[in-house]
Image (cartoon, helix red, strand yellow):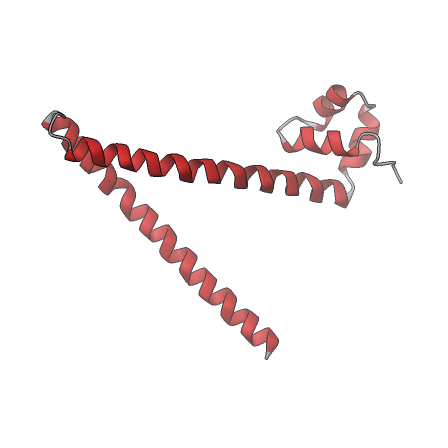
Length: 125
């Protein structure tokens, strides 16, 4: 078994951020063969996945915050008396364009949550 303490953490972080195993090995200063051996371990893949999940969650949080501001901006343009009519129409149109896919995604999420709850109830019964 390969020691994880020296390279495991940094190597998994670099791979999670998009580097190839080869490039990550160079970046962290370990032998390419060592990096490839580590990358074939299940706990390495789990660590990379966990890092990506956490990073993705942080990005989603930022996007949610930015989207609220973006909608506020579009609404301000749409309702603004100083905006040109074409800008107001464009803002209104953009709001309507994104509304349907968001509603559909929320509906799917709610249905999936209900199915998961039903499955958990069946397992517990």
